[in-house]
Image (cartoon, rainbow, N blue to C red; front, top):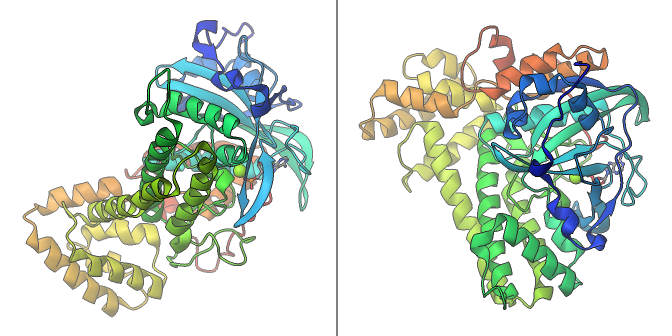
Amino acid sequence: MSPHPAPLFAASQVACSFARLPAAFYAALPPRPLDQPRLLHANPQAAALLGLSAADLDSADFLELCAGHARLPGVTPLATVYSGHQFGVWAGQLGDGRAHLLGDVRGPGGTFEIQLKGSGRTPYSRMGDGWAVLRSSVREYLASQAMAGLGIPTTQAMALVGSQDPVMRETLETAAVVTRLAPSFVRFGHFQHWARSPDMQAILLDYVVAHWFPDCFQGTAAQPDRPATACRLLAEVCRRTARLMAQWQLAGFCHGVMNTDNMSILGLTLDYGPYGFMDAFQANHVCNHTDTLGRYAWNAQPAVAQWNLTRLAESLLCLGCAPADLEAALAGFESEFLRAYHQGLAHKFGFTDWRPEDAALGDDWWALLHAQRADFTLAFRYLSQADRDPARWLGLFADPAAARAWLTRYQARLAQAARPAPQRRAAMDRVNPLYVLRNHLAQRAIQAAQQGDATEIARLMALLQDPCTPQPGGDPYAQPPAADAAAVVVSCSS
Ligand code: AMP
Ligand code: MG
């Protein structure tokens, strides 16, 4: 660590827009710092959004900030208040139970809030201890990069700090803090919290629209039309969420805990817990061991997003929105989801456009993968070369005859488009990743980190940053877990 660290940010770069809301929106309180923190990894790309250099990431100032010891100049940290539905049941006030907003920093990549997760109790902690364990923090840290590398909207993770502070879960573990960045961490649950307080809801609406959705504003400065503004905001959140769901589905990503408080108003992937990138494809795959009813299965995610958006819409009724107008906004979800999903699937298949008659080929693709439990990621990745090297692609299927029948239809469809094969293969390899954050890879990085070795985290971060490009030594990271390996079990425990 440098003995005389330069200040990380100029005071003129730093503010906290959330703190200008009325006091009922948050509790101002400092994070509880980790004892003897150790920087396990810093993400130069996320840090560059704020204008931080490699030398800054090595500085004592950076570690102090990310371990909860330091403040941004002139800003008092705060925890925001929100509510939500958990597993379909209204749960009332939920958070922030273990996150502190340090403030916003204006940098070369835009303005980002800096939030610590796992930084101690807040007035909203309920029964929780305010800590996050190393295991779940590594998972959040890596997943943020995995999604960013795939071009999927997400909160970003800038730093992972570990400690020896003990934390009790099923077993005794140690505490860690993830430093996250996002333009805003406002969730559907923030609006749900004020569903019966029109004045507060109007303040929240004005704040969110002025900062992140200026195009949704209706009325005049002297006389804002809040019902109309709220409906436009809802329509835009529906479109963003629909596009996000299409991207999740096409990456084989299961969030695992799609509660309304884990849904970002900006349409970002938010709060990584028991998520999973699928290995063997199963349409009703449930990644979260705790989700015994399969509410958040892969094939349920788009419909769950719609359900969550409907809860968001309900919370806007208090502004005087007409139910029919809210319903019209909600109706935009399905068409935007289908558009984004079809376009994305067309690109993954190497088509330049999606035709209505492709629907059968798409449906039969999923049916084939599901029936044979073929590897999600490699089934797409190897498809680009299936004309030159059918054996490698067919080798992913237990019954190659069924796969060959599908391939014949697919190749007939390719032949209808006059796209040169080399161009098509290259385009497919740019959108079908080779490396995804498979559970067994994350688990290996966690186990090493628990022994004080963060090199596996660094290795995965490098691969996941550029997941479509083969990298030296990367082959083992592209493979599914060994058939006889015990499945990694992930639950809500974090
Ligand atoms: P989650 O299901 O992880 O999204 O968490 C739901 C709410 O519980 C969030 O507001 C968290 O801040 C809070 N929470 C989760 N774990 C803890 C913990 N160990 N201590 C305090 N609050 C927590
Ligand atoms: Mg959460």
